[in-house]
Length: 294
Image (cartoon, rainbow, N blue to C red; front, top):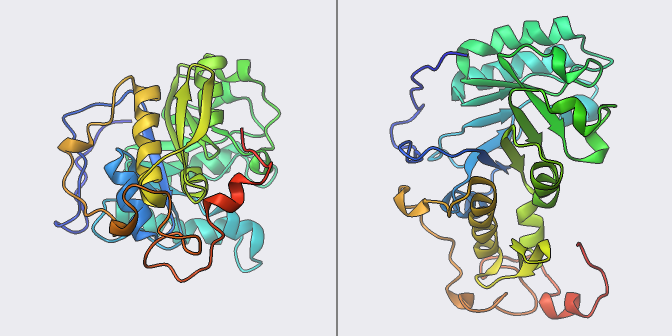
C-alpha cells in the first residue's frame, strides 16, 4: 500500500519520533486507561484500541484500531456488517497506521473481507486480516496476515510453516512469551507488528517481562503497576527490535502519581496505587501462593 500523510485529529496530540524506524511495531491495546497508556507510551509502544471500546486519552494519536470482534460475539444487536459500518467511521476519524479487516471465517468469505479492506484502505496505512478458512498464502500482498495468539480466539487450522512465505505478519494479542516463541523459537522473522494488553495484568502482580539466560519470564520490578508496564515495553523493544526504546526522544508524558512507592512494589498491602480505592491483597499474599505464570 502507498504511504500517505496522516493529519492528527487534534494538533496537541502526542506523536512518536518518526526519525527512528523500528523493525517491529509494538502496540499497547488500551481501554481508556490514562496511567497505563502513559506508561506504555513512555516505554516505546504505539497506542491502539478496539473499535467501539473506550478510546485512550485524547492527547494520544491512535495508530492501531482493532475490529470489535467481541461486540459481534457477545451482543445480538451487532452482526459483522452493522459493526463494520460503525468501525469504519472510527477508522475514518482516527486515520490510524493500522486497521483490522474482519476475520476470513465461516461468517465472512474472502470476497467479503476484501470488500471491507477496500473500504478501509483510504483511511489507514496498513491493513491486517486473520485468514481462518483460507490459506495465509492466498491473502493479497497489500494486506498483512495476522496470527491469533490467544487460543480462545483462534479457529485457524494452520501450522507455523503455513505462515513462513507471507511477506509480513502481525501477532494478534497474547503474551510477550508467545511473541518470543513465534519470532525466535519458531523463526518467524517476517513478523512486523504485534499487539498486547497482557503487560497490565502482570504488572498488577508487580511483574515486568524480561528475557534472562533461561529465556523469557515475568520478574518482580520496582516502580509499582505503571512502572512495570513501562519496563515491559522497554524490554520488548530491546528483544524484538534489537535496541532499547528511544523513549527519551519522545514527547514528555507525565508519569502516574506513585510518589509513595517509587522504590517498592505497592504503597501498602491493600491498594495497587495511591489513588486506587479497590482493595488488593498485595505482593506478600501472592508470593505465598504456589501459582506461577511461567
